[in-house]
Length: 159
Image 1 (cartoon, rainbow, N blue to C red):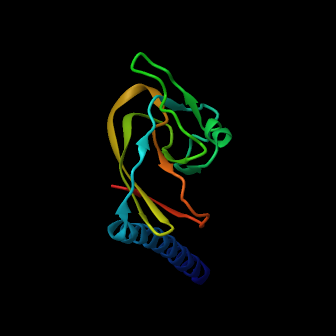
Image 2: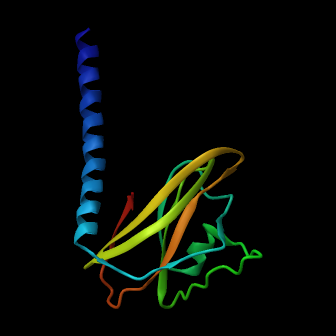
């Protein structure tokens, strides 16, 4: 009985530590967001998430070259237009890919802010009705590469 009580107490402490870590990261992201300045970005349209990408968990991506980008996304030219052009010499991509779902889901970029070497990508997720198919909702934006070679720190903030 004493061992069971100790094991349960250890599990509770472990869960609290994990939750505090997530809360601290979200709190830090919000603090950086509040203090940072908006930067211009280009929303990427007419792309899709490849079906060989891990579809079981959310992925926060920073992609700095075409090969890495093509490992996650494919082009989807439609009647509405061509995929957004990315100049890999001057830009990089920040993206959020959500787990596969059977609900109509849209992910929309709200803002990108930067404070020194800290970048916060703020986005909104709208979940709708169930569908008869599955999808991997995502959003991606192209940002100008920094002028110096400083190490960037990225935060993803769902609002």
